[in-house]
Image (cartoon, rainbow, N blue to C red):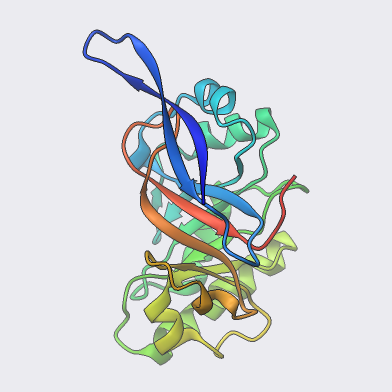
Length: 221
């Protein structure tokens, strides 16, 4: 079963027309759809997005920072728009495993200022380090510092293979957001997994080009 979403497309003369884009039915145990965004999506037309999605998308994550000094060029704008529209959302940091974990956490916190209603911050760990033990240690330093400073326990975003082969069982008490672009839903029955990024090639109104699509085990309102 598919869920139909109205999406604006544009012809060569900039005349809008409406087409239907289908989202897969939510797998058993998942209750909501979300997207995650960064500068790769460019400037998003948030008015079109909110006018057209009709409550299908109920949460958004935005890239805020990367490494020791990079700031996503669209974070501030995206954050302001999501706050204005009351959309549940959170921020993520792209982790570089060869850089100091504490300094990366401090960099993230110079850009991300939490509000009471924010979703948990996310550590995006998808780059292989010089050793599994080193990346895990540096990630734990980042996670601990961000939780101490924000009062929110972060989530960990990673690929299914990284989770299965490196991270599973190494972060007791933490929840994971897993990227895996197939339909083997049984992989996500694991109680540690809370979000599933099921596509990196989605289409949404107001967003030019592909966007990541996610299922969540949380029923966002």
